[in-house]
Image 1: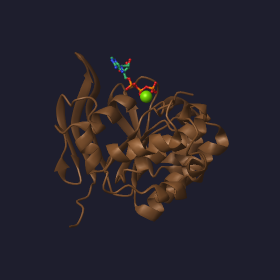
Image 2: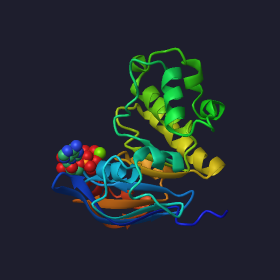
Image 3: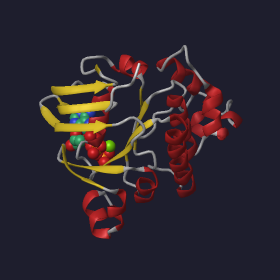
Image 4: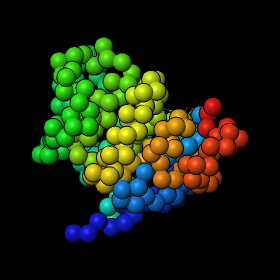
Length: 237
Ligand SMILES: Nc1ncnc2c1ncn2[C@@H]1O[C@H](COP(=O)(O)OP(=O)(O)OP(=O)(O)O)[C@@H](O)[C@H]1O
Ligand SMILES: [Mg+2]
């Protein structure tokens, strides 16, 4: 069956916490295999948008369609089973569990019938070497690779990455950028990435959606962020 494009379609989405509206009328369309960066200063609602897409926060109004399916009222487990993978800000690996145990949990949350750790190790060879190591004893960059690898084990069609460069040393940020590109080139994985790191944005993104005060206020080509004034305006730097 052909996959309807856009793969992810967000229409007039609003969400927030209690009575406080944070995501304010966002519409966004992402095609299969696109890599889209969401940029914006601290506190504008980038994480809240991601958590609404995955279903951790309910939509107040609007709709989220994924692969032609209305997922707006589905819980987060069902959304992840349909193929939406989410790597939260701050990574959220289980620090007191081993790498192997973390990966096993990722497979279970995703789709237990289709685990593919060989593929994950192809992208992140370090994880195979560290299977029995406690996740909490790994560096920030290694933990980020584990967090992404754990989600990939569930075979998502789209992956939502929330600031994967945070607390990661520059050479590993470059590795993560290369892996994101490879996931798209080799597997047509779609990527929605919230990011503040200019080099990573420029290395991976096809386009940048600018957020301010909960709304999408514009769109840029990643090259346009080479202008220091533009970068200062749109990023928390
Ligand atoms: N669990 C929560 N309960 C109440 N308010 C929250 C909660 N999480 C975030 N907020 C508020 O919602 C607003 C948007 O936060 P959010 O984390 O989505 O921003 P962000 O753009 O991801 O910021 P950052 O760049 O710092 O990660 C902020 O004002 C924040 O204080
Ligand atoms: Mg955030």
